[in-house]
Image 1: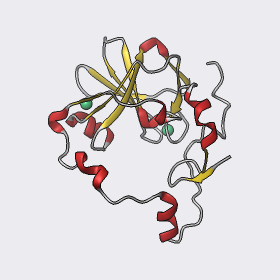
Image 2: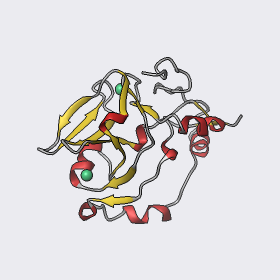
Image 3: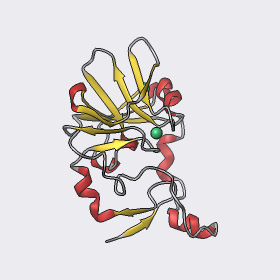
Length: 178
Ligand SMILES: [Zn+2]
Ligand SMILES: [Zn+2]
């Protein structure tokens, strides 16, 4: 078993378990009040650079994985919803603020934020939307200097991080057949 300490995420992440979790398609917010399960793998994944997604996430773009409405089940709690326009509703956890869903009303589809999946590596974007608002520096990100979290911790004299985020590995209670 490989254990990696991850800044701001799970205290210890068992990499050997990631394939198993990938097939379960579960996710939720950082505090654990809202949890979901996808009944099928996402049919499409994309990123959106549009100004509204930037505002909704507080980030340069949103990464989203889409399923049919019926294939998303809330297994703990429910998201709060903000109608960000006449055509889109955005779900988020009212307790911790994590953005969770994007839903174009009457489309029959809903997308979950890829970062909220327990295994965000299980899907990858196939398309970019809202490209007119793409921030000028995103295309050059891979050229920036990089640092691993354990090296950052070492450099800052941090030996341990106690995560207060929900860990699906440690709490499997809500991961049943709801
Ligand atoms: Zn939460
Ligand atoms: Zn957008």
